[in-house]
Length: 146
Length: 146
DNA sequence: CTCTTTATTGCAAATAATTTGCAATTGCAT
DNA sequence: ATGCAATTGCAAATTATTTGCAATAAAGAG
Ligand SMILES: [Mn+2]
Ligand SMILES: [Mn+2]
Ligand SMILES: [Zn+2]
Ligand SMILES: [Zn+2]
Image (tube, rainbow over all chains, first blue to last red; front, side, top):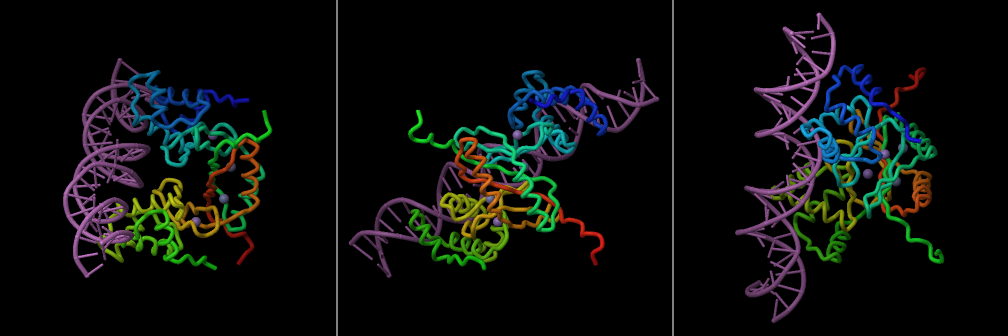
């Protein structure tokens, strides 16, 4: 189910983009590849530190910026909090954030995507990217259940 | 066309929420009421300063936070930049941001709104609020035109 | 209108998130 | 192995926003 993106692939990608394959970058890419969630810079820094104590937060930020530029990751700015990241590899999806727990649920609606295109087109625009975030809380279980 | 929200209405609203009607608040509310765009804190501060030189940026921030809490304004966090605000009075809409010029265009799609509800429902959630932002650039004029 | 009480304000300092300058280090092409 | 530019860690700087505090000004009572 999970798209298997090898770290090796990323290294090739970096090289072609003219970047060097460094130890910090390898570690960060590995973490991103193995993460199923949407960690922020500090969390990535923690995870990276547990592998190599010498990595710095600056490098995490710099690497995320670079990875975003070459399209390897997506940066999210959910309400309030700091930027959070995820590998871009998986197919496009949007997010529903549980405002109670902070949980992030992914979803995709081809219909909505199409409508967005339609709207932009009608306004004379081509969409470069977009963000759809639903903020909600778990629905109270229907009475009568149980 | 523009929904006419009197400042007086806001004053009543503030009072009922237990807040005092102060000079800075009146000025800021007037500016928000008359603004057709989505100014950030500094811009609001500039506009307010031009009316009353003594208003402080802190007060702008504090006021925006308070107005957001009582639902008088909406806070937006478009890619990159600082928070931007607009009066909540108008009916709900989403935004298309011109990544070239920074222009913000408003739109509304009842269809998308419904689909969002459907999706959230299917995931067991009630939507409290959401944000849909399209980032794009003006479409190249169709060849043959002119 | 005057007095009293307490919210609000301006200012400066504090925070939070992210960026940047720089000297030391390291990746990579000779 | 060598040389050099890219990258890193660290500290200091920035950007956006918040907060403590003493001074000021709303609002209600009289
Ligand atoms: Mn995701
Ligand atoms: Mn708007
Ligand atoms: Zn989407
Ligand atoms: Zn909407």
